[in-house]
Amino acid sequence: MIRRYLLKAAACLPLMGAAARAQTAPFKRVRPGEPGWPPAARWQELNAKVGGQLTAVRSPLEACKGADKAACDTVFKQFKNPYFIRDNVALTQTTGWAEAWASTPSAYAIDARNAADVAAAVNFARENKLRLVVRGGGHSYQGTSNAPDSLLVRTRPMDKIEMHDAFVGQGCSEAPQPAVSLGAGNIWLKAYAAVTKAGRYVQGGGCCTVNVAGLVQSGGFGSFSKNFGLASASLIEAEVVTADGQIRIANACTNSDLFWALKGGGGCSLGVLTRLTLKTHPSPNFLGGAYATIKAGSPEAYKRLIAQFMAFYRDKLFNPHWGESVRFRRDNQLDIEMVFQGLDPATAQATWKPFMDWVAAAADDYKIVMPMMAMAAPAHFFWDAAFLKANVPQAIKSDDRPGAPDDAIYWAGNVGEAGWFLHNYESAWLPQALLDDAKRGSLVDALFAASRKWSLQLHFNKGLAGAPAEAIAAARDTAMNPAVLDAFALVIISASSAPAFAGVAGHEPDLARAKIEAAAVSASLAEVTRLAPDNGAYLSESSYFQKDWQTAYWGGNYGRLRVVKQKYDPDGLFFIHHGVGSDEWSADGFARL
Image (cartoon, rainbow, N blue to C red; front, side, top):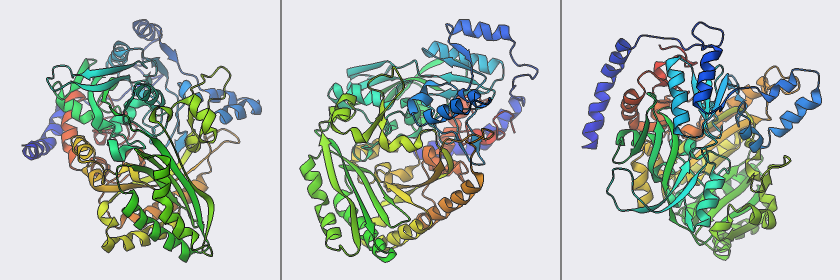
């Protein structure tokens, strides 16, 4: 039945696209100063409709226009604080991507308090042919949460959290289940803290300051996805504002096509999520991390280290307990940054003993820069700010601005991403067959060759092979590329620099360096992807210039996504780079092709 539906939908796509172009006259979205841009009176009317939540956007970078260099430097220093970026409607967590995009303020922004505010913004943008942008946390690497001359909807004020002991979707009759409803403006730190405090667990993202709605729409991996699956697969129900300004409920029983598409179809290309209800799980007894750093004395020894680790991973770590990553560096260093769930610290430490013993036995070849440390705590402490500050202060950083809330923390490992300027960022899923004895040698060769060109990471929690059957079955019912179901890891390779903006003296991007590093990243990835050339990439962590992005992100699901896009947003109001249907619009999303 499903196969027949997909074939029928795919066959209709060319006709539907032609019909849409015939029925809808081409138009150009308007910019400030152009005929059709709303006059001040119309903006005032919109402001009244949204309860005074409309503002004209001003960038803090205006401090860099004068001669006060110290004021400008202070702004750039604050770019390393993700809460400073989150609080400023003019900014995004990535400042730009070389030769691709630059973070640019919108003309106006609405701090939406509820779905009615969002609907007013959507109607205003549609009626006035404005570019509409939606921002939750502003973490998009590809710049999808910003656009110049646009109307921005910021969902941050919608931060209600409600626990449910027995939730049933509207219009549904399935068995009640424990769940949590999250306003779209929440970040995962807040969601985790609330749910684990209630004795449950919800699958979300690993970074504390990532927005809940954006992550779910992208598919959504977290540190413990190897056991609990995709965040999108946990979605039970969503409240969403579609391009016609209607506030809809989407679940398995109501607007089920839209519901499926929201589960991994890409952030804000199908509508604006205002509330999400996610399945919760029994809380693990322990959550923890295991960390070590090992440096090889020669390239030959390093290659043996890679081989030993990959065999060890296959035998001991390829299971639902273990997630996160290892990094293979160009300087022959292996960084282990793993997490685990459901194991006590002693068991976790014992798991690593054979590998660390092997390293110690070859002291002439390897230096243990940081000995293996395995730490764990009851799950409800893992996102508890007070506990983390008292017990593992080195693992976190805090919002250091005067008056900042005590619980405004973030992982120290994510500080490099705050405000960064990207040179390149690429990913690819690696099938579990590469771990087999017959193919693992080729995998080791590829990882070593890739590390000669640029450092790379394997994110084991971003591949579902080895996960429980229930998690894989749930992920199969999302819009994600099915390649993720058979992947043991996602390889990620990136290059970046400090926050940068063109035209700001002392803080301009080094485009010559960016070009060299971007090429090195691509060359490194090519060494790995030759083993799995058509395995796809994760849309939230992939190249701005991703080739064949429709197939890379969604595999055979793209045709079905286009049908949903045509039904709920036929005029392309929700345009994002490499979003569903964006291939029918010009590069800037303003003019129909």
